[in-house]
Length: 82
Image 1 (cartoon, rainbow, N blue to C red):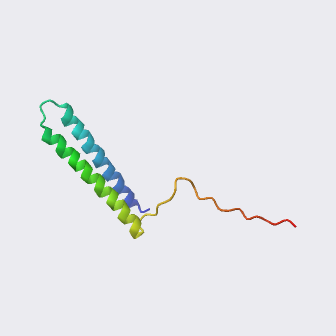
Image 2: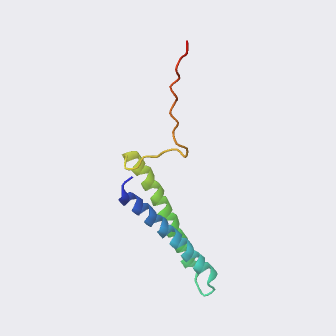
Image 3: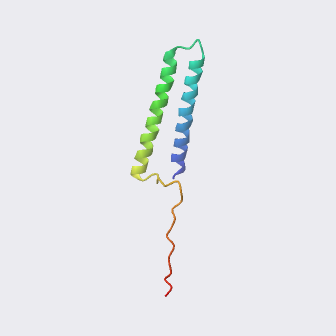
């Protein structure tokens, strides 16, 4: 995977977490309006959907290659003993 794509994914995740904590701050602050909480959560959901669609598109176009959680096991060549 190219380093630029890794950087964009990490940056997107950082922005998503930032907006989540921003919503938590506005939720816990008594002076804050509920509109700020909704706005922060809406931005977080939008960023999450954008990241998900971008990952699907990058996989489809071949920029990233998905793999399984476990390494692929190659079949062992069996030698016939006769």
